[in-house]
Length: 428
Ligand SMILES: [Ca+2]
Ligand SMILES: [Ca+2]
Image 1: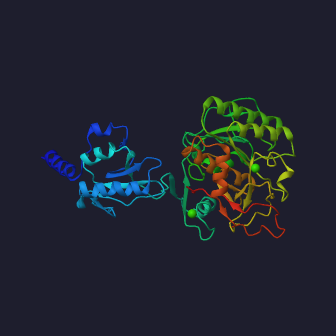
Image 2: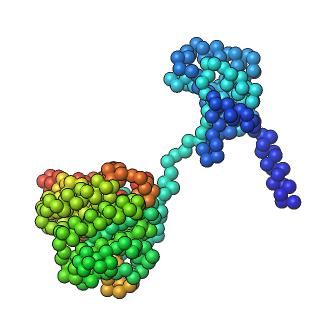
Image 3: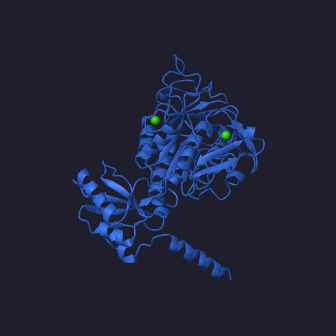
């Protein structure tokens, strides 16, 4: 019984519109939009040949009006077939017009007209929708997650308890080159890839044994399920810092080179986060340049010495995306490096994230180390929506989409040259 009612409804619907025959759809001058193209039924653009004149178009219209009894004027958006066939005025620059509700006979007549090159079904135009934005209600108390709360909204106060980000990170690799990771922590369940490596000890177990858990904190900020910016990205931990909190430029370079190799074999979009620094060191800058050349976006903390970005590597590397720190008032942090080589700023004070003390332990930290992974997270999430984006495209997305002119203590000789941009997570 239900089936019968359904068929009756379908028949009534079909009778209300003018069907287009299969043979007409095969006409090379006729472009009927297929499934998925949002074509508008009974509405077509008629395109005159190049060089056709407005006088010729008027003669064409007069012929249609007199011989086919077609009206010319405005085509109503709703129920256009209620008024029979209507043609619009000429759109002179493009030498096209719109026809609504033509019969098959009229369409064939137009297709046989040598002054008409093509008839294309009209298509629905809609406003730009942010269909790839993922929205999250922050856990209680949301004040712990102030950084996530801030970067999805224009102003820092008041934050609203919600976080949102373009993309989710699925299919993207995030290389965290740091002190390793507490791999069993709740924030990372099923998202740490076995390609991780320990460059300090030369084995494939990059567990975080540094007392402050720097790498675990950084990973949780970029990618933690609750504390992270990009919640479904794949984490590849590269341990280049030992338990004493130091490592070598050589190990850091080796880690960057391994990420480049893995990017090529895994063939997935990739981001590197480096929340580490050393003296200006050309070989390290070259390695970053190679990573960017291979298509990897590289986010680097600007450093915490209240000095120019150029005083350390790899923050000074031109190809690095160098991240300064701001606090809850949007001011550049008292410790943050600054200057024209900074690409963007992100929250870097009192940032809550996973601790390596236990599988459900948390802690918080201050430093550009904790600002950079937020940028890495936004970049990784963006790449999950646009997996073929180049590094310059990711950089342009971050720069152009940023919250601009929010940092109060820039300009007038204060923190000279620093661009006034704060990371935005939900630009689409
Ligand atoms: Ca918010
Ligand atoms: Ca840069």
